[in-house]
Length: 267
Image (cartoon, rainbow, N blue to C red):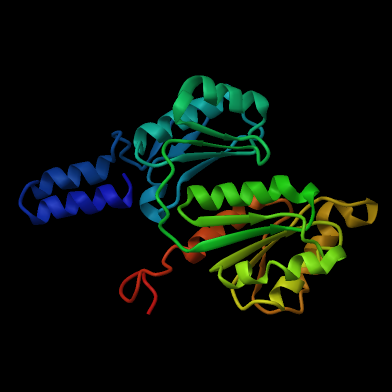
């Protein structure tokens, strides 16, 4: 049961359309009768109440799971929340093919970012997220971030290949960056791009180091340390290659943009 379903149920109680005890039973059991808030599939205990707690789509990390396990988890989550998408991250060709076979037209496949969304995408409910990447080699991680933010309800613009080796390319994007409510900056090698962006605009920045680079980049550690030591204020850093984490964080940052004063809104 998600926040919208819970709100509708409480409104029905307030209107006298649903008895208090009946509403309590439905809240206790959830949509699928999972009284503890999860469904035990044997190999996984699937959290069916996460959407109620966080408002985010449920996400399945596919790496290390068999295609059959991923499909079974997604089926249960989609059954619990048919009106909301289920995200699958780090999905290889085999997993994405299995999901397409089962969910067909419900399945949105993003092969570059190794992502799949099962279910209808939400309408845009938040502000503007811009996802930048330093080089074309960073595109898989940047695409993961952009796809995640989009499925979480943000308006997303994606700009690629604006690294500091040609700083004029970045300067040309300033109007777009300044009009954004959050900027995700993806970079490998020296990892300098977030600091450059942080000195150009005054919006929240989520920096993503990637494992792109030669030997001394240490699989993204050099970029991670550069970003953590950024001299530009307002730069927050996620883990190496964690486009999903950056996209979700950005979507949460912009979720209440334009809502106005009141509970959950800006004042």
